[in-house]
Length: 141
Image (cartoon, rainbow, N blue to C red; front, side):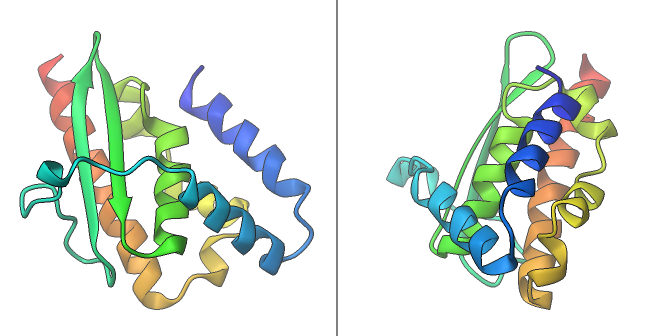
C-alpha cells in the first residue's frame, strides 16, 4: 500500500468523526494502542528535539528502500500523532515518504487546526526526523 493510499484510508476514518472532541479521543485511543519502545531505545540519540513532551523515534531501513518506524511519547495526544505517522510511513519506501506532504494531510483531516503551537512544533519535528532519514535512505538507494 502506498503512502497516498494509507492517507486516504486514514482520511476516510476521520470523515466519520463528527467533531474535534471525537477526533481527539480517537487519536488518544490510537496512541494507547501504540506499542512502547524497549527502554534501551529511549536514549538521547533517539529523542526528538523540538517536542514539548518526551518523544523517542527509532527509524530503521527494512527490505529494499523501505523504512520501519517505531516511536513512543509520554503524552497521550502525541502518542496518537505518532500512531498516525507510523500508519502513514512505516514500511513505506523512502522516496514516497520524502515526496508526501504530511502537513497538508494533517490539515485535511482536521488535526492541525486543533493542535497547540507547541504540539504543532512537535509534529513538525517528528516529520523532519522522518523526512531526514528518508532523504538519506533514498539518496543511498
